[in-house]
Length: 294
Image 1: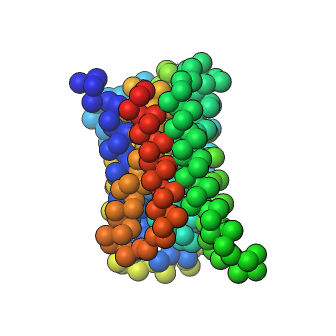
Image 2: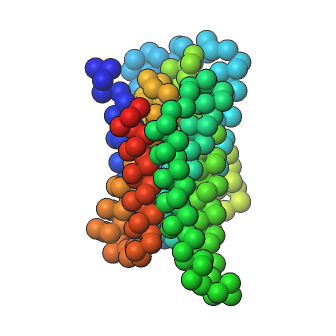
């Protein structure tokens, strides 16, 4: 059974990509709608599972340090999700996933190295180098060919926001990894969903009630289905993080660009330029260089 746990990261990558594909079809005026809906759905599922298994009684037995790590990780993860949702409104799905997950993987490996004392090896260094080269190929060639005045502002903004999503997510992974030393998977997921429900709920239903009411019935269905996909992804991700190191979980989750590209090409007819394809290939080769030699 324990041999299955490492591959839960792959399942989380698939379900997050599926949620992103569904979210691409939605036209909403604020990026807060989906993170809030996803958190409400996830919170409901976690409470239901905790009640069925009577796991809720352990939620009050952890140390202060564990609570700080988990709830702090929830805040920075929420910020990463907001950046991610904003980024896919500006650039193609495959590029957002490639940039953000590459940043997540590299930074999480570094955090594991310096704080969790997980040593580097040659394969990790080579893989990280290939991923960085991939990001340079995706973005650098476009900038070099284009005069400064003609650079697509949406493209630049999308790349920058994707990087910030990766920065927030990598810190969220590290903090959740520390919290899961003592915490159960259900409580870590509970803390991950409670903070967005409270904070985003206040913002949405007090400051932006009109925008919430303007969402169409069709968009509401897509948001709800995407929220369930994200709930499954999150449970798989926390199980993987509980059973493996933060860096291995990040590595497995970084395969999400493969699924994202297939979804983007198959359902949204997204067009990738040659340099973008080559950059994505470099990122994936770097990912599997680390994964297969772990």
